[in-house]
View 1 (tube, helix red, strand yellow):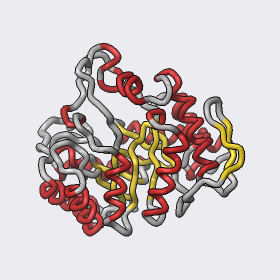
View 2 (tube, one colour):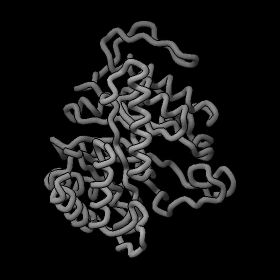
View 3 (cartoon, helix red, strand yellow):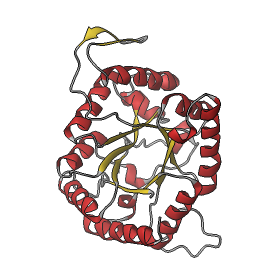
View 4 (cartoon, one colour):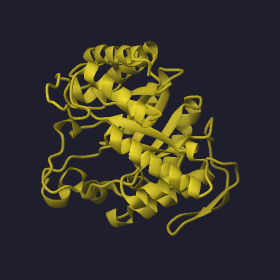
Length: 310
């Protein structure tokens, strides 16, 4: 059965803490498989040229991105008031963090939650975020992600820990706490180079802004590449984020993917399952104004998806 998740309320029109607690408890009670957070540290006033959304010149950033609550603090809040539901990051921008510190934070969160963490990671794209807090320049983001994966593998493994990269070194040390389970690593990827990293280094692909047709094609390519590399192709999972900013019914024909009301989004979830996705989560908090509305829409989505047999 497809795993179904929903994003936690990180946007500025929600109250950090109180609304996260209410949403997390409700989503677990409804029966969702997972809760998700994302990382956004600022919104630039200048959105021209490379400062546009995803680096697209002049593409405006969503207003919802202003004042996004910290991803790991939000996820830890949810972990403290739930017991079963998985906790995912979709995604953390790894080069905005010091690698060993991030590895320890993720290990601690996994240990505290009893082994419920899914680590969705990415290399980032915003020059403004990198200028503000990046541990490396934007041009070094791919290498920084690789370095983190090397460091995390050691930090999450048995003591004594040893690693050496261009910038960081540990020559035999005890580092803890250790994760409660083997943390699955999902990588966000769109470029050929990033998709190749998924095959080499990750448990799965976490995708955003892709249609079911694109999921089927890209996942097929990833699994073919994995088989050619001597890896079990089915070991590569596929998690898809459905991003929505509006739950108004779409009357367009054909309807664009992920445009519409909850019933239409449930159809999209089914299409993604048919395309091969193992896990789908929906950014419902971006499309509602209150935590009560979020819980109501999430309950409707869960009921409709499960009633469809997905």
